[in-house]
Image (tube, rainbow, N blue to C red):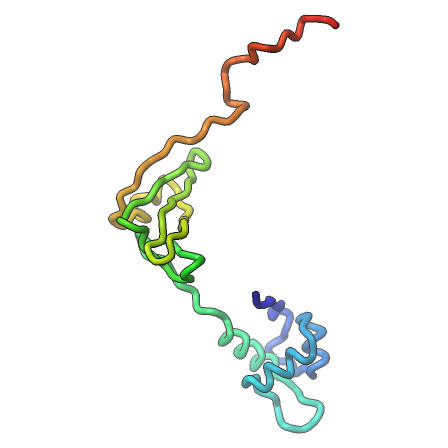
Length: 157
């Protein structure tokens, strides 16, 4: 997985050497060299190479992956790395709290479970024509009303 660097520390109107930039964002100087070879602009070809902050920010912004927004009725599949509609247009809603819950379905391409968090207020928006089955919340141990029947706490040993 690619490492994320803190590019917000780089000032737009400041020029940096390779060693200054690597220390500032926490990358190795060879990484900066690879970025220069990949198209990161320098001020000129003379040593020491200087990198303008605005050029660095533009280079890193161009390298960011493009975000894919899910439309109503779509869930993001981590296996396919794309938004997908669940198989047979069926999804289950499992409440997590009184107001929030999780929609789940099966990816038609890879067969993995796909999920999308939602609230009850936005459920009709997120549904997008899906047939949603509502499941009741599972009962927790501390929600049980009956006491333990096999424990006598008054008995002294």
